[in-house]
Amino acid sequence: MSNVVVRWNQRAVTIKTTPGKPLSEIRAEACAKFGLSTPSGFILKRGGAKLDLSLPVRLTNFVPGTKLELVQVSASAVAKPVSIVLRTVDPVEQLSGTFPAATSIWEILRKLEADARTAGSSKVNITERCAPSADAGSGRLLYQMPAVRVANRELAKFGELKQTLEELGCSGRELLVLRFLPTETPYEDALMEIAGVTKDLGSAETTESPKVPATEGAGPAVDAANDEDLLMPEASDTPETADTALDLPSVSTEPVESNDMSPEPSVAQEPAGPVEPKIAVFQPSSSTTPAAAAFQVPDAAYDIGIAELKRIKENYHIASQPQRLLSDKELAEKEVIKRQEMEKIQALKIKVRFPDGYISQQELDGKCTARDLYNLIRTTLRHPNEPFVLLIPPRDIIKDDARRLTLDLKVRSGASLHLAWSKEASDKAKNSPALNDELVKASKELPKPSPPKESDYVATEEESENAKGKRKEEAGPRSAKSDIEKKIKGLLRLGRK
Image (cartoon, rainbow, N blue to C red; front, side, top):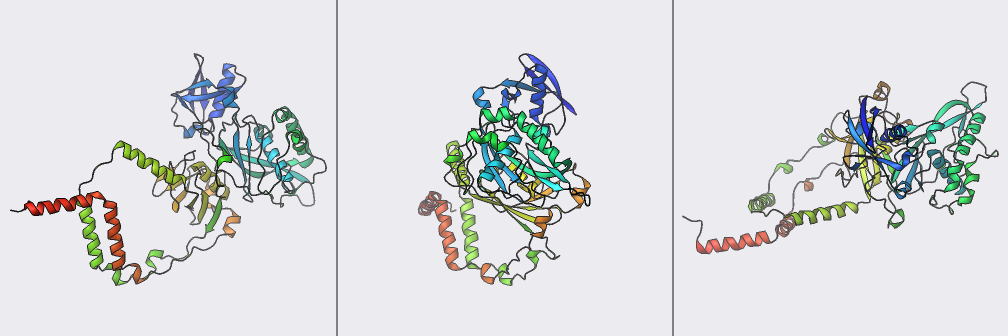
């Protein structure tokens, strides 16, 4: 445990922190000590840089005694809407919508649930789910609590679900991962508590209705005047049991990003929809022989022919020519072209190898962030709340933050990452299979590579000539200039004794 110092209006207070404490709680405690009643109207800054309030302390590189500034923001910045994607763990489905920053997590669940039912999915049951008691012959229905993972923590109580997006430090875009926890609360008692929670949030629901876009193939969005009726539980609703799967409509959504420093892009201006996340799981190989050693390499692969010798000589000649260093302007132009090419990437396929040998292949949208990848991997795990890290072999760690996979982390399609459990993870998670039972049952064997042919190792004369012409085009005016210099030196007999 360490302390940070928060300063505001020439005053300073000390806040005790823990590694898992989010910055939004530090802001709330500081506002309470300063006597400020609206924490949502303030942000935290360090050295003039705005901090992401959804991050925990362990990801901020704070040292004991770090000084932070509490800065008041304008009303327009506070009212900025947040794009939300709600993803369920079992089965993997998702809903999306745009909500004001003052909307609570409970209101988001109720609104998305009502919109899904309006769209025709009558089996959707998020906030009023129940299951029969495990006691034999009791026949009593027990409430199943929706647990939402957002901003690197899980909210699994009614009081926690009443927190707003602004209080949690969410801005721009955010992903909500939903799962259900069994409780000992009778279903009828839970309905009374749900009615009380909805009544407490009634004023916030009637002031401004969040605008949720209609799902794919659905009808128009729900009217703002009907929000209050949709959010109240009806006595005629039939409770769903635990074995009833969530029939949520699959919605194409933007990748989730959380970047307070950049303006929120408009979803309506996207020319094409993003790629729907797809997951494929492969079983560990049962063979002790590596795939690369399973085939006999022909002797022709080690022979160097005339074509290979010409190519090697040409490469030596090009490498020996003087090359001009690029100017700052040329480097900037090259970087702009590179970023434009990365922006054109529509799909990104990433393989993740788990400690038990299983391999999962995720097909993501090209604009996804590292946090999107972590959240998607977390939905596939048997123990999603256990801490883990993703590694680029051999030891480069990808942090769970809002950096883009393509632009910032330079991850390309086909990249292979390794999942490693953190030291804080339990022995149960480390010793049990990493993936959940549903994905393990759906796993299949790795495709076997086909044996190489002799033609794959021997280059033809036509291929060698094409490669030579391509290298000359890449060399450009340098090769022509060097040829002219050679002719002049030959005429003047320079370089001879």
